[in-house]
Length: 421
Image (cartoon, rainbow, N blue to C red; front, side):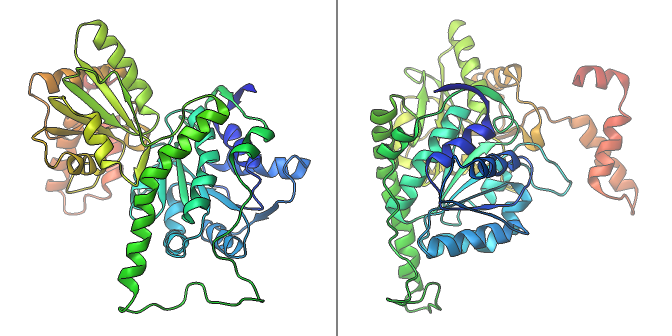
């Protein structure tokens, strides 16, 4: 059924249609509306046979989900930003124990300084924790990916993190096709856990493992991720057969045929990039884009194939590895390790800074004329940076950098303020 609906509400309804038996809820912006929405569905009776548990922290939310999953229940939770960091130990435990928990991550910047707006720093902080990570480009895809995530998690007995951009998707009202309960039931089998705590057949979960077996345990977790490279597109095909639309998969190529320049990105920024691709194609430029849906496992061979024939690759990413540059770009370079193809990184949207069509077009033109740096910070106000560096050099007790930058921006000359706006 087509609905004009907030992204968080669409995800809440999609999750409820998957019949979770335990939902662990702790609010943190910008995912709060999701767990609130699920709670309302439990209270109204639309979601039956579900224990909705209000916990005291993000760490408790995932810890309770771990216990519920180990006891044989289909478990779900959601978090964002600092909440994900607070549950870091449990994030690793869930994957290490092979528990098929599904968790929504409403992507948001990590402080300090405090910032509630969107970027992908939180997801990148847990990229190697052993969870499958799927990134939604639209609210329709966000809803669809949750339905696929439960099936994927339970077939592999591996947790899945569905990432959706905070505010940009979570709080945006769009037209979303919400499936029926019958459709979801036809797609998602009942939960049959691989491992379950049972007093009649007792065994340990999470026991000590020494050097003689730890490598083998970790290898098998890696093997599950490799299996997911085949399973994710298979589940996407089944989803299309049941629901009549393509959604999910490993990656999506857009107008890459004959493209000299190809953008690579994750999440909602792909919408802006596609608009630029269309406009530049109309102007005669050979440009295309690839949207990465599965960041973990990373589709090395599929991306290599998608970029075949390009002369240059520009990676637009909402995260920064200080001292290195781009996190996504490092993975893209790995996919192209046997291909002599330049990969340039554009760090954009940190802390929610706007990524405009004009900015992406300027990046494209710089890449084409050879003036784009290996690592570019889109929209960086260099004059403000220079003043803060000079101020810090002059003063032993210069104070916090964030406050210094804010003062520099507030006190910049009128000509600079006009140009920046």
